[in-house]
Every structure is written in structure tokens, then in C-alpha cells.
Image 1 (cartoon, rainbow, N blue to C red):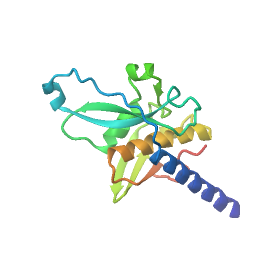
Image 2: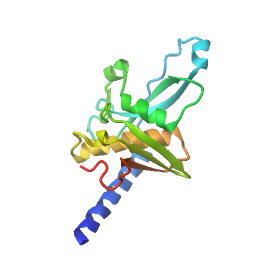
Image 3: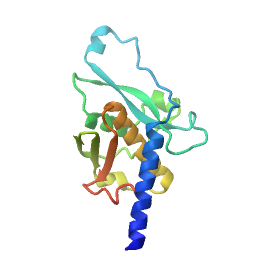
Image 4: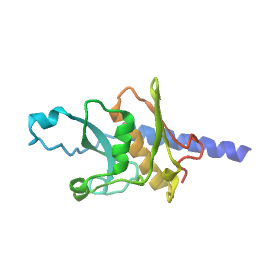
Length: 173
């Protein structure tokens, strides 16, 4: 019982540490969307930031440093779920050439996104955990999700990541 509480306490401490580092990271480089698009094309587009890893911008490979890329999507309204799904789809070819990559498996699915006050819960299918191992990979995935959610809605201060409703075992190294 004591061992389980110690492990749970350490897990909470690690999540809080990751959140504080991710929230206050000040080294950012952005890929700006194509400004050559006509005004008519831009009218039906919404843009927001999603966050990817980039070893060119983080040569020390700290695992939890992530960098914004501006994504444009069609439509007149955008949701946090749509932003997370865009994150899951990963960087495009141009962004990959600039060194951006995602640690999130492209086959992961978002079950639901729920926001209550300053907290957002993002629930994924069990695919998110498949083949994921090591604290560096888990930290990178968490950083990408948390930073994207906070950038999407600046009223979000806490992000809960769950897998099929389970928060304790989600994304464990």
C-alpha cells in the first residue's frame, strides 16, 4: 500500500513538473502559414498552434521541449478535439524537413474532450499506449498534448490525459 502511494505520488509530481516546464517554456519557433493564399481562401480557414518535438531546435533532446507549428483547417469554427486530432496527424512534409516530428502514434484516436472551468480532459483510445515506452517518449507525448491544449484555449490551466477513461495508468513509462 505504501509502495503504491509512493509511486502514485511520484507520478503526480512528475506530471506537475512536466506541466510547469511545458507551460513556461520560452524557446519557440513557429512555421507561419502561407501568406500567398488569396483572401477568399483565408476566409474559410481557422488557424491554431499544435506542438511538435524538433531536435534541430532542441539539440540536447530534453524530451519535453515542444515547439509550435501553425495549422490551418477549413471551416468557420474550431474545437479542442479538432486541434488534438490535427496534432495526432503529425507534421506535414515541409514541417518534417524543418525537423518537426510527433511522438504521438498516428493511429491514436480521441474518444472525447471535456472542459470544466480551467481543466480539460482529453480521453484517447487504448491505441495511444500501444508501443509506447520510456519516460522520454511519455514526457514528449504529454508535452505535445498539454501545450497544444493550453495554446488552443488560454483559460485551460490543467490538462488530464486519460485512456479509455483511465487516468492512473494512462501513458506510464
